[in-house]
Image (cartoon, rainbow, N blue to C red; front, side, top):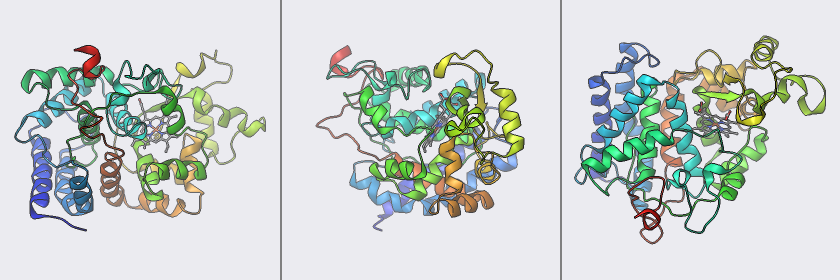
Length: 373
Ligand code: HEM
């Protein structure tokens, strides 16, 4: 592990910046818990200097740096945090949307903002229109708003891919999760293909083996799979995505036996079989993390252990021989989950980065530069 003093300093600076942010924040942390919890989160930010130190050398190797915009756009992270906070105040579900947006960005064409594009330089149907994204992935208008604010202060400096990564970080924090420094300096891509999204994004019916292979293809390990699945501590899923588990699991005509009976009852009442099916694009939704959908915490793992995992792809993690011990350890130890989640987020945020050859800093997040300017 090679870490220079300046990297540690940048990371420490970044963590302290986040720590300070938390204290100056004016938003009532409706979902984020008490002031004591906020202080704990702040301290955690400092401790994370050590936890994520290993990622620093990687960050330097691929051109990312902590506090990358400190000279070119010193207010960038504050502008993003303020925007996330103001959107969150009017709709606290956006934290989930923004966290997922970063995941779907990174897994398809790398973390390059390709999920945001309305058109692709090669004429392909874009990622956001893919079956696995369409009418499901959200947060685009928030990213556009943030970009407008940034362009007013520092035109042409902050990439859309970095905005997505930082907005995901702020979403975790505002939901009561840890603050952490995000290495920045990503470039935006010009290619966005629905076919890539449908090939590269995992689905809710993947087996543990499929999930592991899917993450492995992106350079992520089994631990990253279990940790990042913990993102399902926030947000909701449509009944249509998992209702086979309630009524006709694996064509048995009955429910998935791995669901607890009390959870099955709750889910059946939220997702009645006779409800007019509006397909996978709309219809009722259910919290991915029963009882704690707005709070970034380890209750997702407690739910898995107790047979209350909503998606089959969540539930399988508690039974697979390689993932089950991780699930029980994150269920038992909240701090361990929170610290380790940060490490996996930083790792995910470095998948297949664009270079100056194939990347740019977009002026508008939904169009590559030569298309719109
Ligand atoms: C491991 C494989 C994963 C699968 C199969 C999966 C699948 C899904 C599905 C099916 C939904 C519901 C979509 C809908 O109803 O329209 C969802 C929602 C969500 N996912 Fe995942 N996901 C995975 C990993 C992740 C990761 C790595 C993160 C972030 C680190 C994440 C964050 C979220 C969030 C926050 C939501 C709620 C979104 C909202 O409420 O708008 N997921 N996921």
